[in-house]
Length: 94
Image (cartoon, rainbow, N blue to C red; front, top):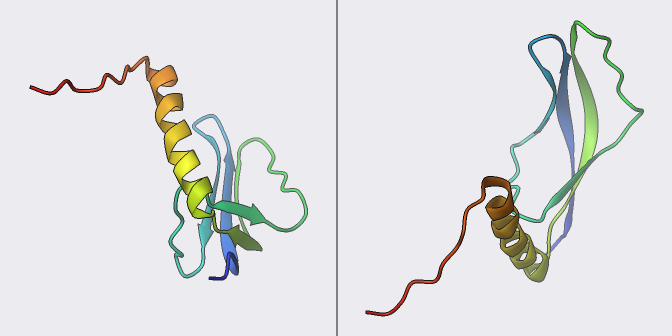
């Protein structure tokens, strides 16, 4: 299995009163799963206040191994519990 995929991508960056965000859309809409990493290549992007700009770049997707995928799912569950003060209590058998 090839653990690396290179693909073109579109980056949308907004820096305004309403929003400060950067979104990356990978061409071909590859399946990104827990633990996968996306690295966008190219020079740093600078967007002045009040602007919204779109860029084209290349990105490399590194697929997580089965162990990395499991670890990501486990740690994400606990991070959410800390963020939202949620407790996970095992069910008792009846």
